[in-house]
Image (tube, rainbow, N blue to C red; front, side):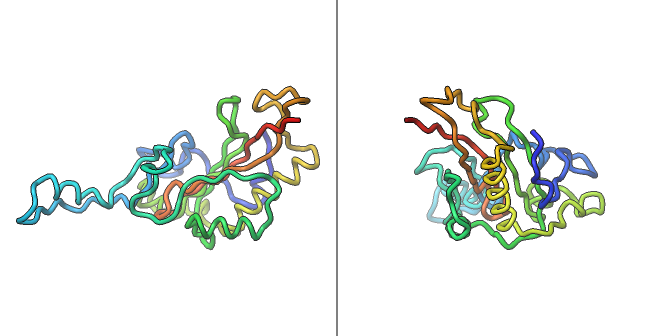
Length: 220
C-alpha cells in the first residue's frame, strides 16, 4: 500500500547497509526486548547463596514482552507499554501520551522502518518503527559508518514524526485516499471499520518505538 510517510521521514531499507547483522532492525516481525541489556558478573555476598548472586546479575539484562498487564511490565523502567487510541486525538493529547510512556520525542538520530499488513490477522494496516542511533549500534551491532549514517539523519524529531504519522493517515482516511474498510471483516453496515492507532514502547532505555494504523469495529 503506497503511503506518504516517506515525505516526512527518511525510510531505511529492511536490510541495514554495511556488514551483515545477526538481527536486522528492519525486521518488523521481531520486537526488541525491554531493559538495558547489561550483563554484570554474578557476585555472591558471604551471607547469600549462589542463586541470589545469579539472580542479581540479571537485574539489568533484557526482558521479553509477554503482554501480561502485571508481570509483563518493564522491571527496570518506570514507563513503557502499549496504548491504543482513536483518530479523534489532538496534538496535546499525543504529546502528553509520549511523556507518560517515556518516549524521547526530541531525538533526531534514528532510523525509521515501515511495513504494511497483508492479512486481517496482522491487526495493523501500516506500521512505522523508530530505532535510535544508539540502539542501532548497541542493540543491533550496526557500526556508525557512512553507508548507514544517512538513514539516521532525520529532519523531524521522533515526537514530531509520530504526530505527522497520525495526522497524515487521519487526513488521508477522511479524504477517502486511505481506507481500513474490510480489515476486520466488517459487513460495512451493522459492523464497519473505523481508523484508530497503536503506539508501543519496545525499549525505553534504548529508544525503540512503533506506531501503527489499525481498525476498530463501529456497530449500530
